[in-house]
Length: 125
Image (cartoon, rainbow, N blue to C red; front, side, top):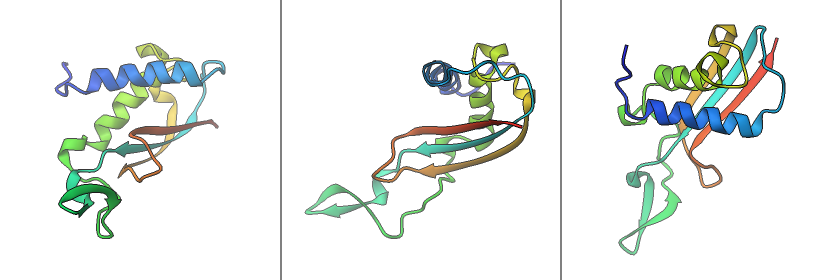
């Protein structure tokens, strides 16, 4: 099978590199619970216009969660993230993504205090 998204391989690689920099524990070989929050960029239409310029102030009615096809399907984002964490695909956190027995996930737009990316929590059960 070939990956249809051009963004899948770079995302998987970013997850591998960032997890190597942030995770210093041993490779997990048992069941894990995982939580992933994907933070995606907001479109310009979510921001207020002040003096005919797009500001950095988010409109009151701007959505919290992304349902846009352009931000990626959550199942594909999860799959690429789990691959990036899995030793079978070059990751350093879990031996294999089959070890994930519970998963919580959401795809939401960033706020002023957040950056694009993902917050990943892995708990060995």
